[in-house]
Each structure stands twice: as structure tokens, then as C-alpha cells.
Length: 403
Image 1 (tube, one colour):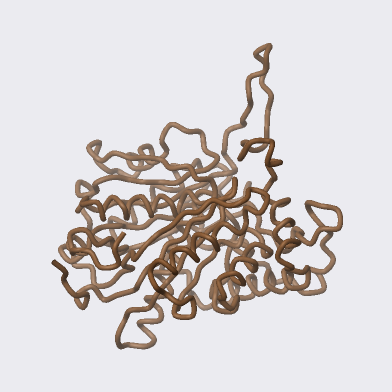
Image 2: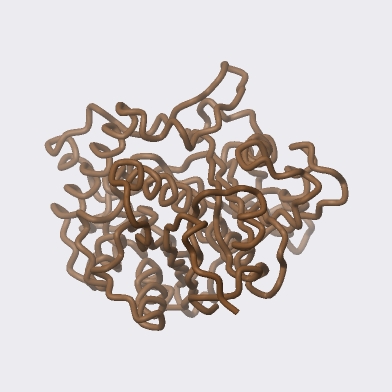
């Protein structure tokens, strides 16, 4: 994807919204995936004044749902006309970001329409899964197989311990990073930072308008008491690992030309994307490989990236990836991340992009002047992969036309 494309093919994200992110079996325990996502899709139409009939496609990531194409189901639940199709993407934890990447590539390929893209996960209502035994009886399993057993098919926690050992990410450093994530998320919530990006949802318990993950009672002393969670003598604990959550997030991806026609004033221009494969035993490093290759291809020094959002599935892999890229962890996840907010698998990659657009707009409001701030979203993925996307925040009327 070229950095500067004709206006009819240059992808740009002009709106991004998410639900509150809530702990599994909490406030959203009775809401199915399409019921989480539909209000977000409807909210995006309202925010952009995009006619529902003007949506070219709905592209949604989902990791542990029931199948049946949740993108189409949610689109109809949101009131989109039957003429609008939908497609569901599964790249496990990367699904939400990969759905946005796919939509951006459709625009770059000449699809001058508007796409609703993102991800959703309702772990609370995910179906029980089973293989069929030889006698026909169900053999239930807790997670799908990611890679052939010859690779060991490590679970996410085991792989996070592997990354910590391989890259020398000690327990104290992981704990400090996790505690910082909670502190930042609490500060952001208290200041109303998240308010503009959240679509409140009606749940059986009432209207839910805020996240419930960040823990004000968490201290360094308490963090130090958590035992290893996945390996004897390991450094990954329940304190420096994310928790499972329910939620949805989505964006409007369209061309620069169409964005201007819609009256959009600003947005994230998509400069490039990359997905890489790595050793499944060290799956947490996948994001660094993808992002490193992407930045190199675009001639971008990591120091020049102003905003960085990395999915904090585990502190160990987040720190290892940032170290590999030469990005100071203090510069990443300015308002906290999944260690505090939770990990709604298929939605998490889209939450990253939602956060980047909100942060870029906040910066522009605080410091009026030239735009052009670079932003990077990246996520490591089960099975040994990683996806990264590079953006540039711009006021759209100022973006030069190309031939």
C-alpha cells in the first residue's frame, strides 16, 4: 500500500467507537456478540452521518464466537439494509486489527465506498466447543489448536513465559509495567478521557457506560504476592497478565475522497500494514517483527512515531516487543492497556485503533497547528503471528491531492 495514493484510493479512518470493556461473566454476561457490536455500528453511522445504504461492507473480527458470520448478523441488528453484506475475520487476537487492515486494503484496491470494520468478542456467551470422538460423543476443549503439536502448541501464558526468559524481561519489570497500566487507565477514566469513544450499552443490570477492569487497590506489594500462573519458577502472573473481557470496537474506513464528501474534518490516513509469522513458542514477539518490517519499509524511525498502542496481553511480550523496536515503554499505551482494561480477543485490535484516533484528536485540540502525527497499532497473535498498522493523523482538507 503506497504512502500517498490518489484520493479515491487513499484509506482513511474517520470515526472510531467502542463499547465499555467489561470482565467476563459481568455486566455483559447475557449479551451475545452481535448485541455488543450492533450499537457500535449504529453509533458510527450517527457520528459520520453516513447513510446506512452507503456502507459497502461490514468487516468484523471474532475469535471464539459461534460462527454463522457475526458481521452480517450485527449489521442487520444495527438496522442496516439487507443490501449491505458482511464478512467475519478470524486471526484470533489480531482479528479486530486485521479486519480494519482488510477494509483499508479494499479501499486501496479501488473500493471507494465506506466500510465498517472492527471486532467483537463475547467470551461470556461463547459456545462450548468439542471435537467428535470416534463413538460420536463430544470431546470438549477449552481452546482451539493453534499450530501442529510438533511445535508444542503452547498456550498464550506459556508462550509469554517463554518470551520473558528468551528476552530477559524480569518479574519486577513486568509488575511495574502492569501497575503503570492500571494507574494510567484509572487516571484516564477519572478525567473523562474515554467518554467520547464509548457507546453506552443497555444490559440486564442497567445502562453500562464505563470499563470495570482498572483496579485502584493494586499496589506494588500486592503485585509481588501473585505466584507464577503458567510455569513453575516463571515470571508471568495473574497480576502482569491481562484478564478476559467482553466488548466490541469498530471504525469507519473509507477513501480520502469519500471522507471529504461526507464532510469529515480529520482522520487517520492508513500509510501501511504488515503481518508476520514467528516461532509459535515465542508468539508474543510477532508484533515487533511485523512493526519493524513495516516501519523499515516506510522509512520511518520508531522515534518519530508519536502515538503507540500495543495490546497488553502480557507485560512480558509487550516489553519485549517495545525493546526490540527501540520504543521507550513510557511512550506506549498512554491511557493504559489490556492489562488494566481487559482483553476482548477479537475486539482488542480495533480498540487499539479507537484509542489512537481519540489520542490524536486530543493532542490536536490541545496543541492547534500542523497535524501529521504518526501513530502505530500492533498486536501479537496466537499461533506465532503479529499484525501492525501505521497511520498519520491529518486534517483532511490539508492533505495534498495526488494524480
